Length: 81
Image (cartoon, rainbow, N blue to C red):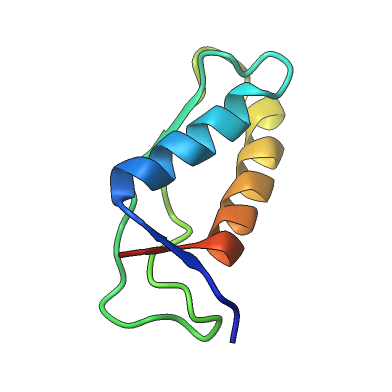
């Protein structure tokens, strides 16, 4: 089982948004709307990968691949505590 750091929903959205804003053209983008799961999924993560993405006016085709990669990384690193 993967050891995940326990964070609040706000800490999680802040981390993901900060990572997203490091990407070219994504300085106004934001990830929010973390949904806790009642039970951890098969990978042991206790929050849904379905989040709200504010693309900050950047085309979704540009933002989505970055957001998807960041969300997957966050799901490996963090659980809601």
